[in-house]
Image (cartoon, rainbow, N blue to C red; front, side, top):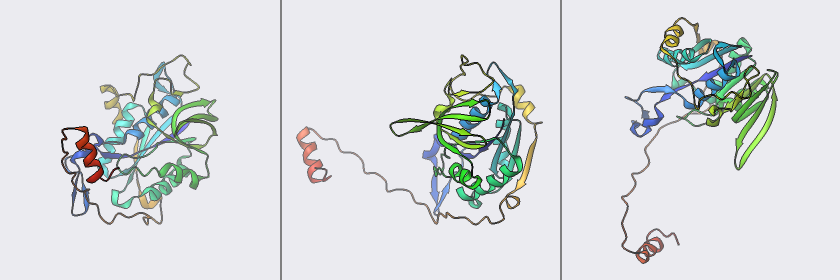
Length: 274
């Protein structure tokens, strides 16, 4: 099985409180760039689908990672190569050149070149939270899709049994390959991904894997290609524009009350909650 995994680097989501708005623009100066967490989960799922869990260093298929970004974004790709991906592609672009539709159309063109059996992506990026690319890509390709996947079972690498997270429970879908699947955080539970090569009794460690020093060094020699956005998308006109950003009004300090009666009075007369 050949799997294409799109990755996006985002400003460190654990320090989002340090983001500033300057001149109507979001300023992430000083924040470390990290892979989008949901994309890391997608990469982990792709690695599990293409290996025997008992021998994870042997890839039973191919995992290709791709990102849109400047030269510095190659660090994200090298990290993915270190954890087990076979090769990487960087599509040269800046954030202001991209929206969900441009990314989806560029990925469609790349899929037509690479011909993967599966596109496995995070359900959304934590900086924009638009949750668009997976669905748009599936529509443009005319491929079946399953979103918010919490578990994936490969059926002889011809189809996938996908358990989706939905409000109030789960839905199980069978999608024939090629397909587009986007994953939720539960995909990295110990038994959430079952390949045709791994014993049903095998349990992975919780979460994503980390690369050993030798793997990090070896990743420097793995193929990393560069492409121009214009080579994939002839018309890169954005459909979504953000004219300006502003911070929400500062919240007023809380007020301590001495009794339940005083609380009820304030709720009724000041907050107009009753």
